[in-house]
Length: 146
Image (cartoon, rainbow, N blue to C red):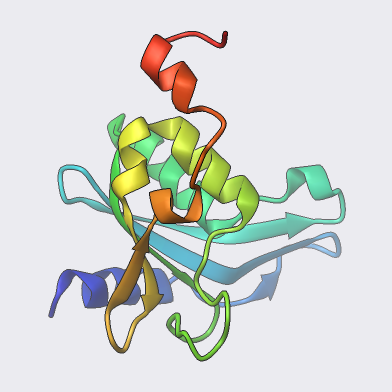
């Protein structure tokens, strides 16, 4: 079993779409991340009628990593609904804009993380490829917001 299969299986265990309440729906998108030290953390999407309370699986997995280990660097990420990411479904497995932004802000090294684009062929893209010319580069270089 390679690392991608291990991550897929751990995330898949979180996939069981359910209504938490008449207002909250969860577990319909899942994610696993491999941290810098090789640990795997998972997350699932949770959505509420109030849009500001929504959390994507990718951000939940990254937050689980940080809360449980203090780590901020992610080496690999896989996210999906009921089936693994595939290039046959455009955008399948790609983090949304808010998640991309959060992952870039969490650590400048996350630009190098591999994001699974096609599970069958093991094709990946980096977060840096998805976030070219990111607005926050200068802050990492100077340590301030000017």
